[in-house]
Amino acid sequence: MLRDMFACVLPSVLAFLCGFYCLLHSWFNAFAEMLTFADRLFYEDWWTQSQYSHFYRSWNLVVHTWLREYIYKPLSPRTGKMFATLTVFLVSALAHEVVLAASFGFFYPVLFVEFGVIGLLVVPLTAVGGRRHPDFYNFLIWLSFFVGNGLMWSLYPMEHFARQNCAPAETDSFFVPKSWSCPRVVIKPNWTFHNPFSLGN
Image (cartoon, rainbow, N blue to C red; front, side, top):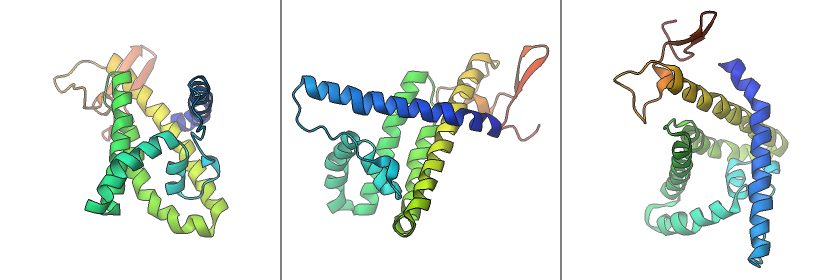
């Protein structure tokens, strides 16, 4: 699985960057031009950031502004900044996961874990070091960006493949990943797919 993840790194990052350019640059600016919307700042230079908190704030200003105004600011005085930040991360991760689950037809919380758990944990780790060694921490952000995209591009197709080709079971569910319980899939006599999560093999 590790080899497959690294094989997916380059295509996944290229697809992400192309999607970013098409949506946040071309699409948003085209609609801003047609609707004579004066504010054209949809993202900042997220690719130069050395702290995850700045990266999350700058890569999609439309979503960041909405989350700040409608979730963070109302919650912060009542519950404190830490709980408000946690809520913002969880709401954002859950919204992304709902879009993916509706698109794919199954729930597989890879993006939720990457954003809502790992993303939240690395924010304080880069807060101090990112100021002291900005180039090194910018490299770490890009490295995690490459690995995270490669992981998503290998795990989501693997789950789709398992749901299409594994034998039905009573435990099958929209919310339970099939790739964790499917021991193997035989498509042709000379080709077998083994479950990378199985500890018994």
